[in-house]
Length: 238
Ligand SMILES: *Cc1c(COP(=O)(O)O)cnc(C)c1O
Image (cartoon, rainbow, N blue to C red; front, side, top):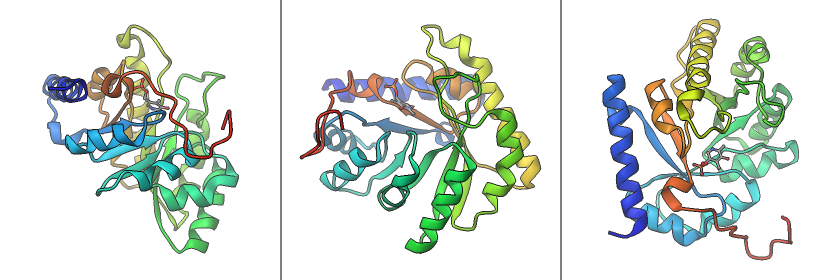
């Protein structure tokens, strides 16, 4: 077995074990392979092993990489989205996970209308209130979720968060628990279920699953260190 296959096998086993601990069905948690920085060959290799969902944090990188990775793969944008990239984000991704402000949602709505498409989105929440991270504060989320849910071209599917980095994943359990509670509070406000909770990365996905994650975003534990892949013709620092 090569390294990628061994990593994938170990991650799948850890995911299943976390589901058992939490009394959940393993089929209720999706694995996203975070391919940012990785060359298209890495995506193809993961796809050949049965991975179907990929995450990129930059619009231009995802736009360039996707056509180089054939097959019925799904791609989510998981990074911060600038308003001037709404059009490409809508055209080249199946779901936008980093929607972090009302004005951005409104801009996406305008472009989706022009492009005549409807797009699933997740709202990014800065649960721990870190100055270095994007995302709605919990208060803003609860104040604005109804207005976002009312935008007809966006299909609000749930919430996502990035937990603070720590070598001890147990420490971020309260962050994941809070995101689940916020999802429930949003569901009450909307009177409708929000199916997705995107939380957990290489270092903390098992705790995230125990706290209710439906989608874990895993990069380095699967692919190894990021390789700084650049799209053909990209300028330095691009
Ligand atoms: C890079 C990234 C990940 C994956 O991080 P790893 O620690 O490599 O698993 C997950 N989510 C987001 C939003 C990211 O930017």
